[in-house]
Image 1 (cartoon, rainbow, N blue to C red):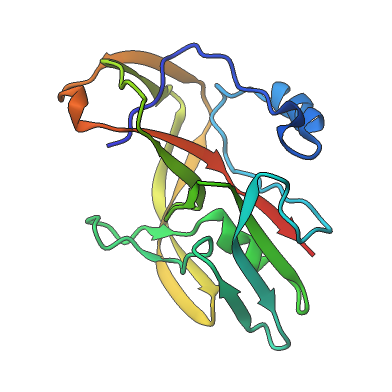
Image 2: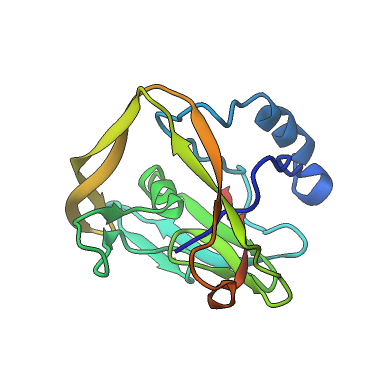
Length: 202
C-alpha cells in the first residue's frame, strides 16, 4: 500500500534543478491538477544522450533496421501482466512508450538522480531512512461524472505481443481530497522519495 503526503501541499517547483526547469514550471502552473485527466503526456529532451549533472544513466536503447530494439539497464521494463495481481492488467511504463515512438536508427537514454534506482513502475525511487511516516495521509478521489473501466489492449514491443487490459477513464469530473488516518502502525511503512525519470531522445 502506498500512502500519499499531506493534503494541500504546494506543487514543488523545478527551477534550475533540470534543463528548461523554469519553462516546465510555467507549463505545470497552468495545469488544473484537480481535473480528471483523460490521457497522459510524456515529455522528453531532444536531441540529447548525456544525463544532466547529478543524474545517472539507468537505461540505453537503440532501434535498428527492421524495428529491432536493443536495450540495457533497469530503466526499460518488458511490458507484461503483473503476476501478483488477480487481473490481466498490462503494465506499460513511460520508458516503453518512448520505445514505441522511436524510428529506425534512433536512440533513447533514461536518467535517474544519483543514488536513486529505476523501479518497476518506470520512476526513480530511493528509501528515505530518516523520514517520519505521519499518522494521516491524503487520498485523492475521482468525483461524480468521472469513471472508467478496463478495456482490452494489445502492445507490440520488444518483438513480442502482449494482450491484456488497461484502465481507461471515461467522463469528466473533479478530484477531491480526503485526509484519512493510517489504519496500520506507521512502523510498518518506510518513506520513499519518487522522482520522474528524464527521457532523452536522439
